[in-house]
Image 1 (cartoon, one colour):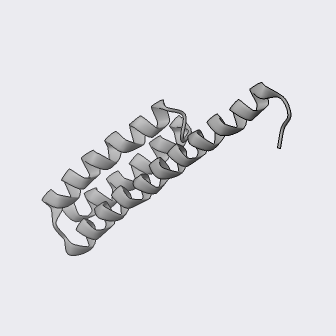
Image 2: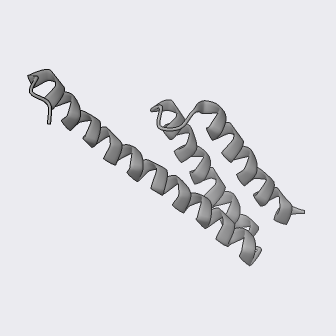
Length: 88
């Protein structure tokens, strides 16, 4: 454990940020799984709705710096491909 007061505070704030980031990353995985499930069922409407939510969550995570903006773009592209595969 650190002896310097500012470093003690930094340890606490880093831990809070780590837990928050972990929760957001977990939520991203969950919303993408919802898209996958809708695609597996062949429900285009549900897949599109889940995809819109996934896009929003990915953009928010990128804006907060939890994931890189290019990572968000790549994931959105992957989700779009899945959704478009059943729309045909």
